Length: 115
Ligand code: AMP
Image (cartoon, rainbow, N blue to C red):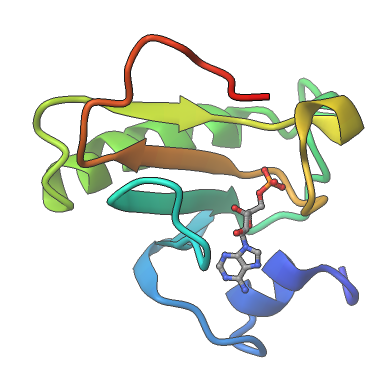
């Protein structure tokens, strides 16, 4: 999608600190990390959010999780990590291209939200 920042990152029109890429997905470090390790894994197909997943396009999500498993090992997240998917306004989603946050590198605790 022409005005999507993550589509532009995939296309190389906006620079990113790339971790991984294959035919289905792209992974890169978050520009404003909220943990010692914080990266994003996104489908190359422009899917705006979890609310836009369908029987036809949702298979990529399981692929993203397998890629995360591999990248977590490669980035040293051997003691665990957290995966976050923000959805819509109340979910705090700012970029309207489906993405999974992967955070770790320290003990993130048991509390899942900070208001
Ligand atoms: P969300 O709030 O779930 O939509 O997350 C969007 C994330 O994208 C935020 O954590 C931003 O820091 C991150 N972000 C925005 N622009 C860029 C960029 N150009 N490169 C890397 N990460 C970005």
